[in-house]
Amino acid sequence: MLLARRIRGGYSCLSFHRRPPEMILDPLYFVLLAPAMLLSAWAAFATRSRFQRWSQVPNRRHVSGAQAARYILDRNGLTDVQIQPARGMLSDHYDPIHRVVRLSEDVYYGSSISSLAVAAHEVGHAIQHQQRYLPMQLRNLAVPVASLGSNLGWFLIMIGFLLSFAQMIWAGVILFTATVAFQVVTLPVELDASRRAKLELDRLAIVSPSEKPGVSKVLTAAAMTYVGAAITGILTLLYFLLRLGAFSPREE
Image 1: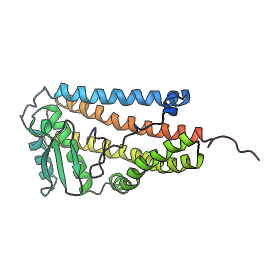
Image 2 (image 1 turned 30 degrees about the vertical axis):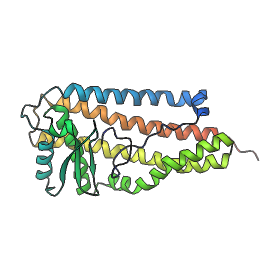
Image 3 (image 1 turned 60 degrees about the vertical axis):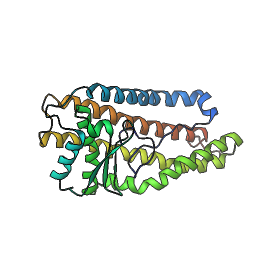
């Protein structure tokens, strides 16, 4: 999914919202993370606003998101992949375990430019799965460890900060590194899915040349949410390492 904040079959973002109070009040943390947080906030706002903007513009063929997804899947030999409606705004995602493309109701039933863009993006993940796209395979493998790092890692870091227990913080940071790696490997997966979406919509003449800019704007804004998440994770990891003195010269 473009904005999901929990793991669903291995295709969504992990969140970084659990931060010890000491971090929020630390000027170094603010200096490091403020730009990334602003980027993430802008990306989330842009994604929703652009989705809503282009959801008001019907596509020329009056094709629903579900119909477009089915057409692209069939033309790529993925007739066994199902399409199902899902509740919740922007809850769209591809489930590689059950081989199902789940589209939010606005996308599934809607015939707007936004519906086509989001539906084609999720189908892009199904095509990646079929073609054994390497970054996707790596992300699948990273899901269990990343989930552990996102939960246990943060717990150890917070307790370590509260108790001033450096060894516990280090253990949490090591686990948290797996989450950051997951965020980084997610980038090529999402960017490639959007690239495939644009390619298929154009190749199969589902969108006209005048409709391409709308598709691109929706997908570009969504992609920036993953860029912001990855940068936030990397800079948070850097903050931990700085506070633990990882880059300080060692005393002989």
